[in-house]
Image 1 (cartoon, rainbow, N blue to C red):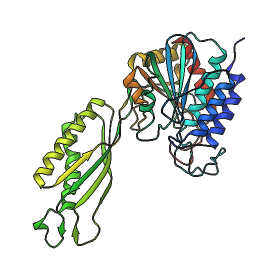
Image 2 (cartoon, helix red, strand yellow):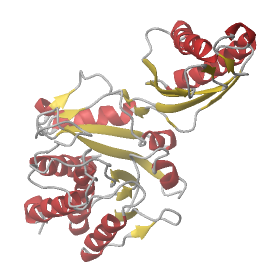
Image 3 (cartoon, one colour):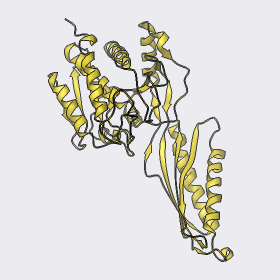
Length: 376
């Protein structure tokens, strides 16, 4: 007798509510991991912990070629609106990006396929620290659990889409994101004698404007590029030219080759600018996550599946890729990957205090993913 979604959906909804009530930030998802392990073992399945990461883990069900489903489990340092129906009890921490839903969906898949046979192996990876920089994906991949697997799939809830609509994009779906750290150093001096030193604030102003212009002039205008500074710090008083100024910013693109080119352009521009102005400039890229690129063959397979199973009206194919980022991108560097965005309705936006989603997204996501995994 087949184990239906209706038979365990109420439990999955309660699990989602519990995870939402007790959220944990990146790399500290200890109680969340404990709950995941308890839920999996109660279904007579084996939860496998990572060898180096202290949180998260994975579970296999079925036999044969392996498909990976990534479910991120961390929350954000955001204080939730107390008027929401289900409210975080961990003050200052909130599942404001829907990872409670992703985790619940991963557990639902294991519940279903733990009771119903599947003609392949499904590996559900409960990944910590998607929101961190650096994130948890690289550490998960270093565990070698993606070796000899066929493909990886991730799903992300989207409050801006109606429940059950699937935003499917062939190619770039999420942008890269790289943090930039720049330190400019000059001789310093008195503001009464700028001609006898290097007016570092003036020079930095030119640097900020010119490096952004230089990149845009040397990157194909048809490519997406977002480069901006978010912080500038230097100087302590009105009559002293500072010796040091620091800049912080980010750069994002949908093309990983363009990203590499940007790194080289920024380094060469910085070298020439520092020599021309008689100062030292150190430029670093402390953290970098590549763009998330959907595999064309896998994307087409999912689109055809939706059409062949009467779900074509739930497909959104004309959407533009997001400028947000997800470290699921690292999975795509290792094997064919597919990043889906599913409408979750509700109210609010991702990463905001008011976010609330419609629990119906759990049913729709499970029904769709179960059918796809069985047929793919």
